[in-house]
Every structure is written in structure tokens, then in C-alpha cells.
Image 1 (cartoon, one colour):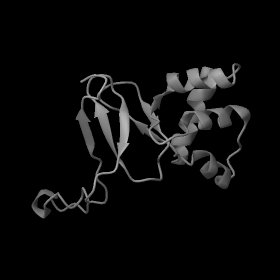
Image 2 (cartoon, one colour):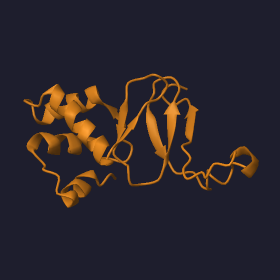
Image 3 (spheres, helix red, strand yellow):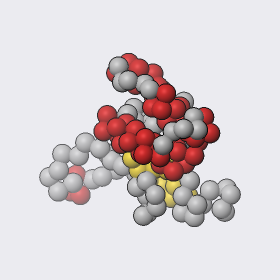
Image 4 (cartoon, one colour):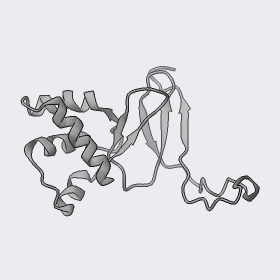
Length: 136
């Protein structure tokens, strides 16, 4: 489960009702919503919330490093609240649903030294692709 609200409170980030609703919508382990999906869910909780407020709040959360912005295959950007928990992503090639996965092993270890070209590699982003059960 995402601990986004707790992290924001600990940072002293001013949690207005609009910001709180956006953070609540993003709460959860496998939440990778588009900005429009965040807005639609936020409106269900707080009808007066503006689309611009949602976009601005998402931008602030990304800038703070509390939410990760994902761009997959030219689709709409999605927002991942699990910025503090190491994981990779599993993406459906058809519908675009994204799931967090935690494969065993170190992805940095599979890159042989001769393929590093002198780089000091500090991070590897691995995306697994396939068809979800609904699309298979």
C-alpha cells in the first residue's frame, strides 16, 4: 500500500482539501492513473475540484519526488505513488494497464562490464511487457 499521505504529512506539505483528495486517489500499490483518471476520481470525492488543480498537484508531487511520472509507448502519462519502494513495471501491450513487480535478482548485475562502456551504472529501469488476463 502506498504511504503517500504519510510522506506528505512528514514533509510538512500543506494538505489542502484538494491536495489531500488527489493524494488519496493515488493511494494504493498498483495505482498508475492518468491525470484525467485522477481528476475523475477526485471529482467523485470533491465535486468542485478543478482539472487544473489536479494537474498542478500532480506536477508538484512529481517535483517533490513523491510520485513518479511514467510515459509508456506514447500513451498518456501515468502517475505512480510508489516512489520510495523499489520495483519495476509490467505493462499490458494492448490496454496499457501497469502493475508493480519486484523480480528477484539485481538488474544491474546482468549488464556485463564490457557492455557498460566505462559508465558507472547506478540504476536500471526494466519494463516487462505482455498481455494482461483481460486482453489475452
